[in-house]
Image 1 (tube, rainbow, N blue to C red):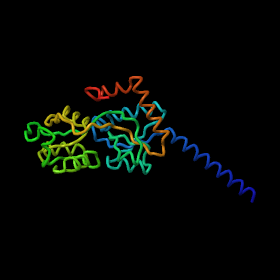
Image 2: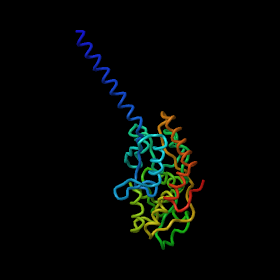
Image 3: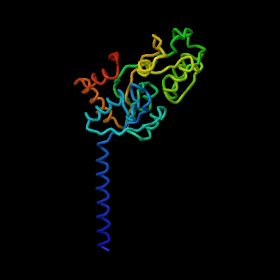
Image 4: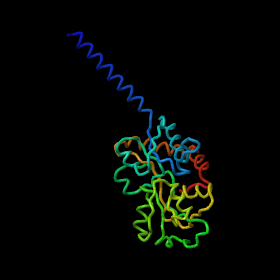
Length: 250
């Protein structure tokens, strides 16, 4: 009987030690959810995830001593996925909003963007934002664009799609009069594929933040400290210069 108890005790101790070792290994991994369909912030090129957000998060990982493990998910699933612990942080050009701050925490703002409207080159019926009323305007499901148009442009006929690229395509082929999306993606698109133009007046000026769960304040502090350090040592500026033609407004 004593031998059986001893074997059981040793087995339990071994399992406990293995569990601690596994947990310790996970301490070195930061799982980050993203929807990599929003160039130049995050997208897939030649089978590899890349973009401003991607390079910045990888630099943050090196600064805090964690290996980044990316989790691909549709934009509308980012906040629910974070809250259900599918990943530790969500980074996907997410605007900091009061509504989102009710359920998750955000880092300090790391980039200034905003919503803009895109129309086809040669479109003379939409010259200013008020011209959007009564027009078919395409937006990505789950983004700030949906709520903003609903509240501020109720006469707009919204065409909601899953991916950013679908918005641009609908305007290109004439099935939508305009697309409303984030400024970085809009200017990236017109740089790489002519045919659309961005209206000069912005709908909003917004700030991007990295979302984290409210029960991990120490991680939020660590990421904030890493962002500050990357800005101080010039790493942030180098990444920004690579992905944007001009520095963002501070």
